[in-house]
Length: 243
Image 1 (cartoon, helix red, strand yellow):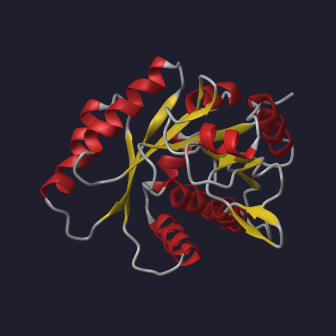
Image 2 (tube, rainbow, N blue to C red):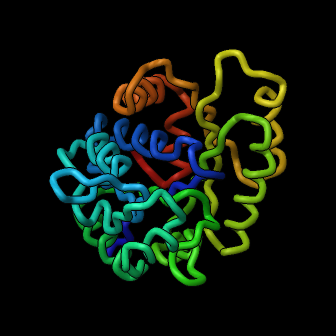
Image 3 (cartoon, rainbow, N blue to C red):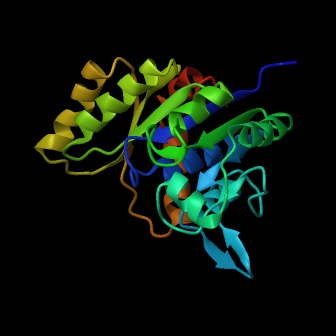
């Protein structure tokens, strides 16, 4: 059986824009005719719609990949409280099972050319017991793409994330800096160079901050920008995606 292609996308922290980056890559691939699958295995802070919990992140990913809604395989674990997954799951009486997530991934991979998997928070976020997001990436056997913010403190967070990935034996493909301002301050201006020098992984992209409003508008704008960049082909190839 052919090994499914995919990439695991993590962040240096919560709120760095990994959902936007994942969705923009999915949108770009979908618009190029690639059968792209998306997955947000665990979402904390879900809200109820018609009595069912909904992951806004998973719904955005699903839309980006050309789906009407996120299926159960796209979003296996939906948790109510906006807390660490292990805590939110305990409050909901749920046990997060990595084998269950792997089975959902396998079903998605069977029908897509590539599957983009977005983790929860960063690599050291606890999922259940002593299991971390890093353990999920290892269980799925996927290479890693790290999304970082450009602001002060990002060098420390990014270096730590990359070193922990290597400690866990994860194949680290590179780093993307997301939300880079049009007029960077001194910390933002120096961050890309320092990250590339210190992380032991290539800097695969510096994505600009989008002026559009709304998640879909931001994703559409970023996907359009990516489509025009000569470096996008290199980014996709480095991640094992041929779009």
